[in-house]
Image (tube, rainbow, N blue to C red; front, side, top):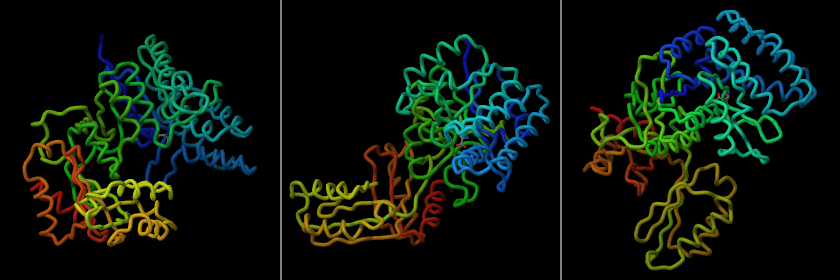
Length: 439
Ligand code: ASP
């Protein structure tokens, strides 16, 4: 069987006629790119609007009984401009009219939002001369609005096996009764991944406006190196820590199907981008670490009690207090007589004092200390487990730069060292770690 590539193009890749032209060149350059998943037009510059946001806004206007013509005319203008400039023959006016009428009659927010992808899909299909397949026919949600993987698989297999080349809009699908349902924001990534799995693609390309993942946030580290290859596990660790490019849930279907994901840049298609795969050869990749990411706004509750190690039920009591107050913890590093709970600040709002009182009452500790303003930094790398001296390198780089480490946690997967530092040291710490592995 010929190989199949599913290519998803994000909002910035389809924000204007100029971007549409780039997308066409990319698609036509490789005949394996048979199934194309577009997002709605995104921002053309930092002051611009995302079409999806405008569709939500239209719905809110209708919901409050306010005229939405002005907002809708911005949407109309954008699509008309694209259609005119790329020179497709489709009748965009009648589609816009139909969508406007439905929104005016009072549809759901999901329906309104999904029209961004729907209209963009129609235009792109015409432009590429590919068949248009409505996502409502192939992406299925159950009665309660949960994604139905089995029904979707059946629908995709039966529909797309008969179609050589198709454009399928991202972000939405339909429930059993035909009502439109969307994924969470940024969900076209998920659609692409599902289609890649169900057509048994050889590759899922995710085209965006950056050349893949970088080893660190470019707002913190100057000119960080790109990551050429990353495993799903590493990506999960970095994404959890705030590195974003791909919707987190988009990883699962492709991973399940054993399909590599290639993050590519529509504005620089010659760049290799980042390949996300299950396993990477140990020798593959240039650096000992794969990436560094971090998050601010954590509080550490540090509890000390002599002979804690021998006290049965101590951990259970502690965690049940968090459970009672509906608080989730991120990490729980422990020593012989100490245990730390690392909790996001937002979780503790109005609850911290009560939780501390409960800990004192139920656990009878020798001391409880609260360390606010903590930032967590994860240094992630599949080579870590087999390389001697990685943590030593991290710690000495931080010491040399006068960063005080307040907490250390190495995940049991051994592909990750998490350290807690004071918020004011966050940027300095990330830079120090990056430099020590890249000089
Ligand atoms: N257009 C949708 C959003 O803005 C989905 C996507 O772009 O992936 O969230």
